[in-house]
Length: 243
Image (cartoon, rainbow, N blue to C red):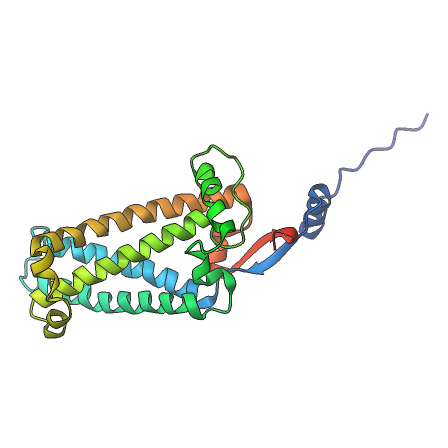
């Protein structure tokens, strides 16, 4: 009797073959799409760094009991860093707003933030249902879903108020140009209210950052489009029919 032939273990498929088999199984071809322009990605990460510096220095300015050193000059250094970073922050905000209207990429333009079409308005409720775990599938979009885009609109309005109140506080500290631009605000609102609003928005922005990271991880996991890596590379992998 002859010994039965031994069966060889299957050879693992190459990544390209795995992707092809997955496309055949689902019937959907994935396309590499550039969703985020390079200016958008640069502004994104520079804004993150600026917000981190402004939050730390702003908290120290608001509560000087938490001194960093025994020298009394540390407050001056912290204020200098805060003001210099604020100039960078203002420039980044202006650059992103200008790019909303100048970008050749439709997914980086203002129409992704403000729901100017009926289709975008209709997508707000499905987006909310997904974030509330009522629906299991995220809405099929290429860039920001309508709710996320609307959230960015509210965020940048808050950042505008943060800049306005910050410049007003500069004017109080002796910056002549700032006082001439925002001097009308103190009699209208009051200095204490301006300080409170400036401090409150800082915490709201930090809360948004927590939600931003969570929602990005959630959508990336469910959509499997490479959302997290796209903010570095600019590219997502999406079904061809979605385009």
